Structures are given as structure tokens and as C-alpha cells.
Length: 309
Ligand code: GLN
Image (cartoon, rainbow, N blue to C red; front, side, top):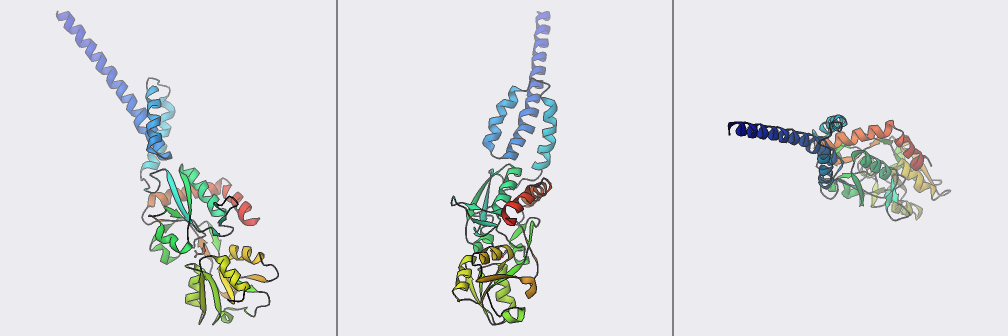
């Protein structure tokens, strides 16, 4: 009997030891690195899907070596979780009326430099990117509610910084003045008292409304509508960002010219991605992705494809 009890005890101990080991291995492989890595990439569903796979590996000691590396990575990026990325989808607001940064493509969907850039960023972050087209003037207010972020050739301004956080700047711009061929407007003083077409809520609007004496400012939701009114003689000039100005003016070659706003004393501006105020995890991850995209040549390729052509 004594011998039997001793044997039984030994058996129980061995079993519990095995269970403990098994349990521990399972925890390390399935719950920590795999699940976190999957969560990083996106949905919880993915994380659940991967769990059984990890369990299957738990007997294999070999499988543990590479997993350790994953653990390090996963830990780094899960230190702070971005709320905007938690559902695996990055919803992006834009105003697809601002070529070459954003425009409506042949398939009816927003396309352009900014759209390609944010999709490349989404890929780096392991999230799906959904683009919502809306009026430029509603973008800032929609960040954190209707959309997660906005990319729209948006200039970093102190006022906007009160409502949103910006990524690192990704493009330098300046306001241009589109003029009818033969216009007498040539200097900042000449703009005084003129009727100026702008896109509502833009930095061009702010310059025309706040800085130009006696100007009568006509605000449009679409820059192109302002340009059409310039052709129709309803406004004397249009103030809009350099690249769209060049695109719009080129549609009316021989009738319009786009003049560098530096000649009118306009300051350089910088475009950045606008994000919910306080989501520092998102800002960090977007900036890291942006750095990588610049380092690996993707950024230059996008400039070539969308802006230089
Ligand atoms: N860069 C300008 C701004 O931020 C215009 C942007 C735009 O019209 N999409 O106000």
C-alpha cells in the first residue's frame, strides 16, 4: 500500500510538473508574442485566429527561438496603443479637389499624392486605410469623430494646432496667385481692394481675409470653382497653394498665369497629417512610418509619380 501511495504521488507530481511546463510554454507562445503581434497588425479576430496555431507549436522547443525576437518588437509598439488604430482601420478624411495631392480618380475614388502616401503609411502600420471625401473646411472638426486623421495638403498652423496634432511635415508649399493673362496685379500692394477667390477655410483664405487691405474675398468649397469665376471675370485673382495653382492654370493655358506668392511676400508653408489631439502613440507611429517611407525611396517615387509628372 505504502509503495502504491508513493508511486501515485510520484505520478501526480510528474503530471503536475508536465502540466505546469505545458501551461507555461503555451502562455509564452500564444498569449504574449503571437497575440500581441497580431493585435499590432489589426483586429482582435486575427489575434484569436492565431492562438490555436501557437498552441500547436508549444511542444516544439525550436519554435521558441524566433518567437523571442517577435516578443521584443511587440513589446516596443504596444507600450502605448493608439485609439485610432485599435480597430485595424485608419479612416482618413480628405478633400479630393486639390490636385495633385488629392483628386477624384477615374474610378470615382480619391487618388493623388496624399492618398498614396497615407496608404503607404497604413501598410507600414498594418491597418486598412479608408478614405472619406469631404469639404476641406470640415476636416479639422471631423478628426477624432467622423475620421481618425486627415491628409489634405493641410498646412500646419498654430490655430489648427489648438484642435489637432500634426505629424512631421512632409511637403513644403507656398500660396500662389493665379492671374488672368495681362493682369495689372504684380505686387502685394496691387492686391489691396481687389476681389479675391479662395478655397474656404484654407491658408489662402486666411491671407486674403486677414492680410490684404480692403480685399473682398469670395470663398468657394472647390478651388476649381474659384478659377472658373476668374475666367468669367467675377474675381480679379485666386490665391491658392502652388501645385494646385499650377494644375488649374495649366487647364487655361494662354488665359491664366500662376505667380509665386513669394513675390507678394507670402511665407512658406508646410503640409502635415492632422491627427486627434493627444494621441501621441499615433503621432509617433505615423512619424516612424513616414521616416521609413522616405528612407526606402517610396516617398521620392510618389513625388515623381504624382507631383513631377
Ligand atoms: N494648404 C492649404 C491649407 O491648409 C490648402 C489645403 C487645401 O485646400 N486642401 O489651408
